[in-house]
Amino acid sequence: MILLSLVLAFWVNYGVSRWTSPTIAYDNGQWRTAMSIQLIPGALMVLQIPFVKESPRYLINKGKSKSFFTHCALIMRYWIDMSL
Image (tube, rainbow, N blue to C red; front, top):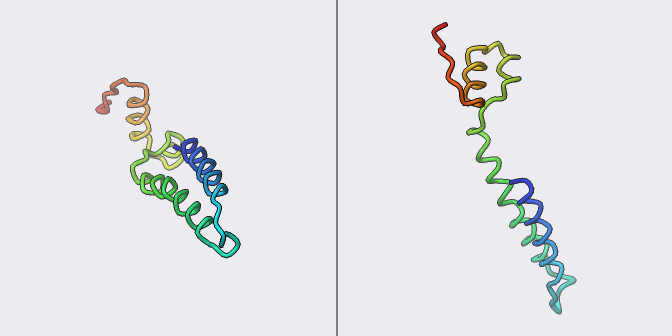
């Protein structure tokens, strides 16, 4: 997603820089268009933050070892019996 955002930013900036208009010196449309198009992927990434799982390192640091083992089991596609 980050790479896609960078590629999109490059091409939007290139496309906006190719605009020609007689009032180009007084027009704010170029930078506003580029900025608003580039904010879309950033906003999508921010909206996805609540759905990201905690990292195993974070879980161990917070003392959540049961969640750590469950999470690692899901990552490695193994089932750990949590009744042990």
